[in-house]
Length: 219
Image (cartoon, rainbow, N blue to C red; front, side):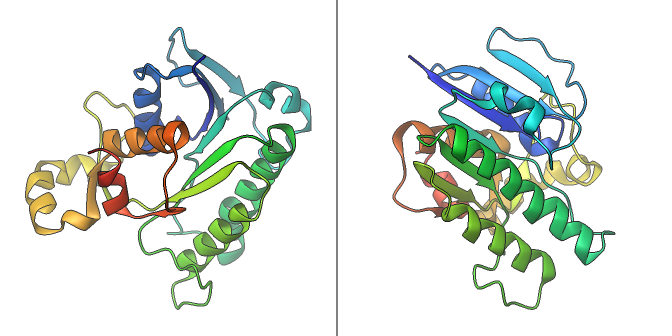
């Protein structure tokens, strides 16, 4: 039997790229995407659940049971957000979702897309890095089979993606040069997706995965 996966953030750039890898991977049997709005994609492996309030999952709990893994790709930029709103939309939302899953699926592997520069001490000078660090730390304490925090930096979108931020469209032509100059800060969304899949199917010896780990899992 293949893996049954829950994926969040499919209407965003990272989640869409990871979803493409899941749908095309032989070891992934089923993907449940939990979105606030329809993705507009049909696939034999794909099940879509529309839910608007990620802070209250009571009405959809039954639909979240029976899965092997969660690829949590939902996230927001701290730019333009107050400290309170960023904390709520990053830490509070993620932990609420994860706690429900850990109760329903104790043998689940949980993969969280964090970001390069995240501060595990939670005491650095950069606000978003501290919040991400706290989120990672608290996720690690939940009773999952395993928890992995992925910290990508610059990500090259997958060809054909719909949800790509303008800045990535503008600088994507520079990807080959950036990859040569800054190899430890550059990967593709395809590589991130493949690394996440490999971590849930085979495991990995580190819980926090920087870009070099993402690339290592693709070798």
